[in-house]
Length: 158
Image 1 (spheres, rainbow, N blue to C red):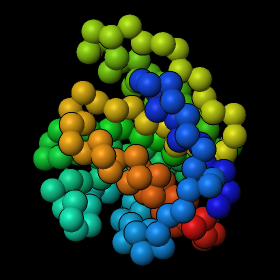
Image 2 (spheres, rainbow, N blue to C red):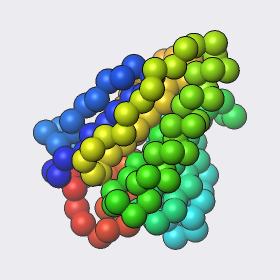
Image 3 (tube, rainbow, N blue to C red):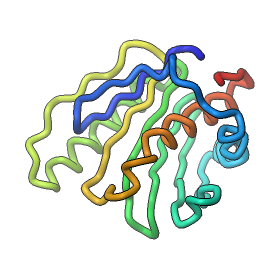
Image 4 (cartoon, rainbow, N blue to C red):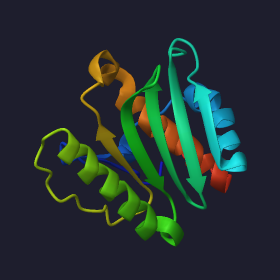
């Protein structure tokens, strides 16, 4: 798999996903959700079973996507994935602004995040509401980012 960096802004943790194995069956379940978001530019879909109490709300602009994972109407994580330099600066600027706003609203003094210097990258903001979903959320975020990239480029990352 080509390098995908997963950067969590509020923990300043960066994870290199290139050595991680993703199940083709999992990606196959996410491809229709990713393809619809890319085709329509915006989509909200329930996650596949057994996570159908959760939704992913996705906005795609060129080779950049932002997606929130929600339980009911509560946002658990906000994410941005970029796979081309075309929209990288704009996507990072919007996502960094969101991060700074969320941190200020929570009463936390935010550290200045840095943009990953390689493509593709996935950036995440975890919300205080994450709770029990934390055990599977990073895997989902990474798989959905890969599904978006694959649906957009037609190339397999798994």
